[in-house]
Amino acid sequence: MDDHSVASLLARAQSGDTRAFSELVATHRRPMWAVTLRITGNEHDAQDAMQDALVAAWQNLDKFRGDSAIGTWLYRIAANAALAVVRKRREVPVDEVPDYAGGPDIGDRVADRDMVQVALRALPDQFREAIVLREVGDLTYDAIAAHQGVPVATVKTRLNRARKMLLEELTKLRAGA
Image (tube, rainbow, N blue to C red):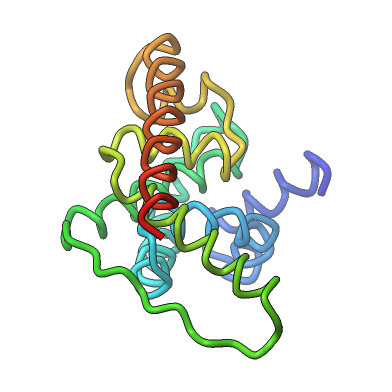
């Protein structure tokens, strides 16, 4: 979608056009979902966070100033909504992995994905948020810094530490498997 189309949809959505809002967020739903899923760690909470994010985006659309891309703004809202859900529940049970028929490759992929989810849950909120926004949301260091209200150097430090912590957690989980 070109800048003119985005600007037109944004103006219409800010005027109350729900169809324009739907079109505006359509291209960002998957990355928003990925951000909420990675931060919350399970589909149920991610669904709650996604719904909260879309409602918040609609209700605050008039506050969007255009300082960043609409996608970046939506990812921030999704991350905030996911963190709010995480803060509400603090302790997350590990989801049971369904027993799919499909061979060992699917099982291994599911197990790996679940292991990453468990490892992500072990990270402190600000580290988990930073790494998810960077790796899943594909946000720049500047965008993450603005979102978290910290200098870019702090974001780089958090990402470096988050990656090390993830590696340690994954190593522990694999050793215990």
